[in-house]
Image (spheres, rainbow, N blue to C red):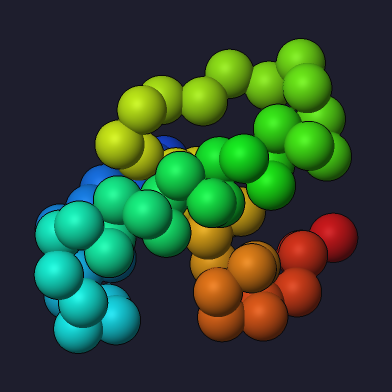
Amino acid sequence: MNKKMYVDVNEICEDWGVSRAQGYKMIKQLNKRMLALNPNLIVLSGKVNRRFYEENCYGMAKKA
């Protein structure tokens, strides 16, 4: 299965068992953190980069 580049609120709600409102709060926090690390990145409202999501929420290490 080919995963999409971005995670949306539906996937976050399913993964974490939270409401849509809480899911959007999580996305907003992750996007804010990602922009703090690199202000030149482009973020999409209501979605978060999959790699950043997995690294920060699941502690998955970067692959070389």
